[in-house]
Image (cartoon, rainbow, N blue to C red):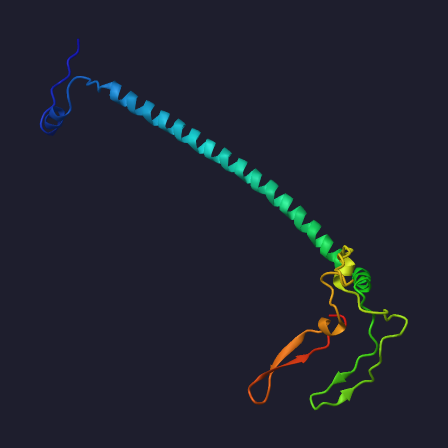
Length: 184
């Protein structure tokens, strides 16, 4: 059996600090620490993975909604383009009773007329202005009153002309009949 020589001097002092036998550290706290770290890491990964998958579902929903809104916007833009095409505008203007105008004339800042105005051609002029109500739906005939005029219809042409109240020079108000503007 061999025996080791005893250390001397500085080595002896250092040897007293280190235990002579093999000291066994308690393994249970270390194993629990490692298990807790691994379990916490796995739980963290699980939470992160579920949050990412939830976000991807929301992203899919938003992309689907964006696609449907984009399709709707394109359909509306096609409708706008169809309504603002020159031939569609001309057709709708004719339905409203509008006719192409003649040559225009312009007024200068000093009141001078530039250009030679001309009226619309007689072939394009309608016999009378059409009311917007006549274009949308046919009105139902109004019931007649005992006097023979339909209800809601004026009894005389003078009653059809609205009166406008304007101030007189003396401060009093006076009524003046107005003539309706054709086409308005």
